[in-house]
View 1 (spheres, rainbow, N blue to C red):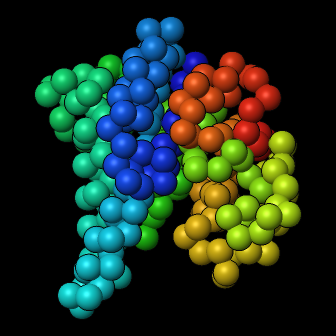
View 2 (cartoon, helix red, strand yellow):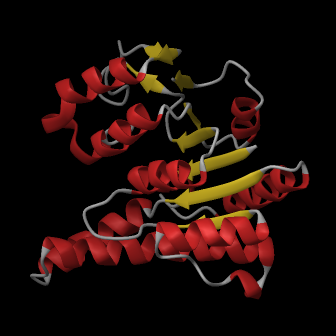
Length: 224
């Protein structure tokens, strides 16, 4: 099975969590040993946002701010890659085509962002489309998709299953006020809907949830 794992920066990078990164390295190696091919997209989390803030204070453009955030995501990707494959895996792909080629060559590829104006959610959707992945598992700091932000609203309810169309409706309602805090960004959601790529959103602080989702267990929120 070809799998895309999207590891949120909120999980491994806010603050940086070497112990959890080690667990993800073990999980990815285990998935590979089971015969799966795995593309991993890593976010930059709080550190990326800090760089954006510093760049803003320096008067850098939004594009330049985004470029720095992408560099942070690639640093976390590089760290995870070298934990799995050693120094020989230090090169992080910077295009979808390069990532697809690396996946074909070694069965695992780890990457961060690729260009300004594109979130790592969208990168995950694009690589999944390119390599015809059967599933995307997104590891977040929540147990799944909720009716509203559970950090702000105690009465928010977790949704066990969604259609792509229902996800679109949720994003359209919340686009302007939720912004970058959206559980899946609207452009990624569009790609997932068009390509019909099954996606499962899980609590990433428990890496075993990735394996559960791949095996079809009822975990997190399933979008299909």
